[in-house]
Figure 1 (cartoon, rainbow, N blue to C red):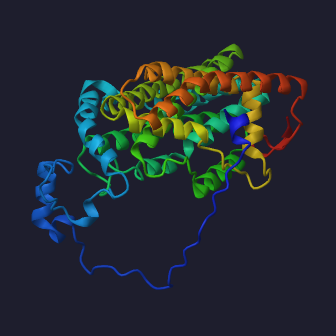
Figure 2: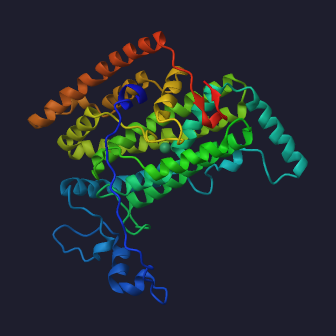
Figure 3: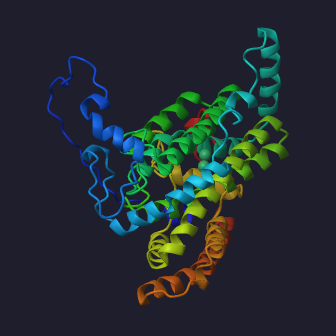
Length: 404
Ligand SMILES: [Fe+2]
Ligand SMILES: [Fe+2]
């Protein structure tokens, strides 16, 4: 719920690290990892990085190990579900890379002879010509969110037990994270090119916002905890599916079949990602219901932080909330959606029917069972308040200063 829950804001401070001014030390000859640690690296690759049997000494060099020191129990659970994750990947959880759609499939074909390409671009621009500014604005915000993908991969790699300490680690979680990123990468690419070709928006202002957002990062309060990470992504993928799906429908209604197809295609990816992350949490729940339920309740107490909440164009200090309000007004993503996502997760994970919990987890379970109804009531009350108080018009840098 971007508005109810994100207006609360975020009070995380930042530290600046001052590095000494000196030229980086480089080896005079390139060294590959196998040269540095020949036998151990090879052995680790052959055995799979997570396959050190319990009780045996882990002989991998320190730099190749996950920083598994805060949540040993949870890391153990991640090891236990890794086989499941690999099975899901093998069964089609990730796209076949030979057949996966690419942004090029949904845009005017630049390989055509120039005049033909111009004709396609003309048709493309004609469709975007009459799109209302509020719809464009939501599309821009969604595109900027997708373009901050480096931040999300960084997040995955903070999670103990599923991280990728080498950058190319040969585990199911490493494969998942990298290909998930590769799939997501097409979303920002495609929406970016769509908006660029539409000619309706200020691309430079948008690009500046992307640069600032990636520089700012974001803290979803997952605390390196893989349970919290997968609960967060379970929620967030569904939220993006809803948002892209609704924007696609509105573009279709406005007569833009290109834009509509693009958003529907992206929403399809988000739906598959949502299922994947939710299935990981289902596995965790079956092994460690206490830990999973306590983490879920704890995440929901502070609410789900939206990934682009730190977006800024350097002009409007309230940019994210203003964007979220437009999305709410267009019913692209609303407080009621936030409540419905939680209802969905509670039902899918059968939260109310989990048995054998500790007293602390039982308390968390009761809290979770009550929460969606509370959220829904709050969201409905907020909707009425918004209906009474139309948003204040703002100048939007993304739209060349047009007021909305
Ligand atoms: Fe995406
Ligand atoms: Fe996604």
